[in-house]
Amino acid sequence: MIKYIAVLLITSMTSVVACAQDSLSEIEIEVEPTAIDGGPFYAQLWFWVVIGVVFLLLLIVLLRGSGGKKKPEKEVEEKVEQTLINNQDINEVKG
Image 1 (tube, rainbow, N blue to C red):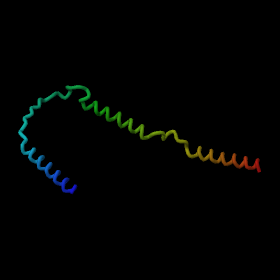
Image 2 (cartoon, rainbow, N blue to C red):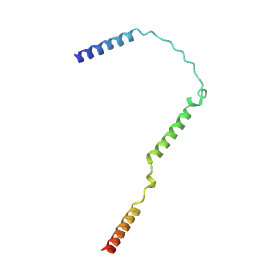
Image 3 (cartoon, helix red, strand yellow):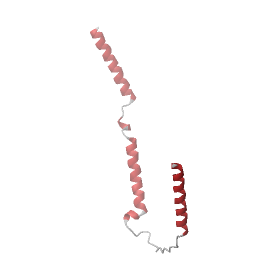
């Protein structure tokens, strides 16, 4: 029953759209040529190019994250080895 109502609704909307397209009248639009350099700065191509470059740089910086702040593997390995040596020394003193 719900499928029947949905199909009926979609079919009726399709016919309404088709009838609405047939009844369109022609609209005449006159466009005056404008100067390339005219208009506000935010309508200029150079402005949007600058915005795009700034956006890309910001995106690169944010996606890069803290990649440079990570400790090198050698430092981590040395600290692990030092910790193991310290633990062995403590165990020898206790034992």
